[in-house]
Length: 103
Image (tube, rainbow, N blue to C red; front, side, top):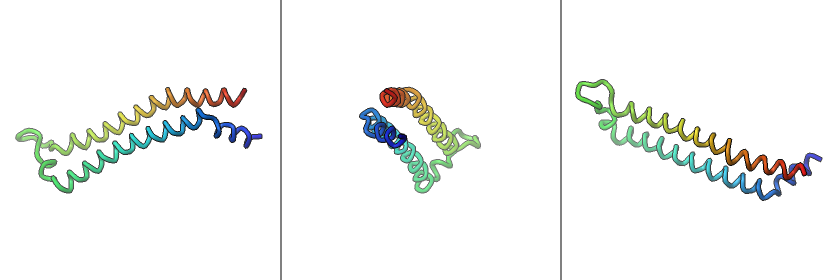
């Protein structure tokens, strides 16, 4: 009996839409983070003097610190964006799928 339900869910057009949208969105966010992290590593590798420059004269804080903190902050923001979309659009699609299967 469970295999019939799983097959019905798998064949549901809303399920295919959910898998496609969620996959594309996850890849988009992953690519954004990958570009940011790789860009930061390239800065470390090819412009360490720029990252090591103090923000202000006489300051102990270099440019690298806010850039690194910014990357961490962006990762939290992207995670929040994913959670908002998952709790909204993706959950509505899951509810639609389950309602159609239960009928």
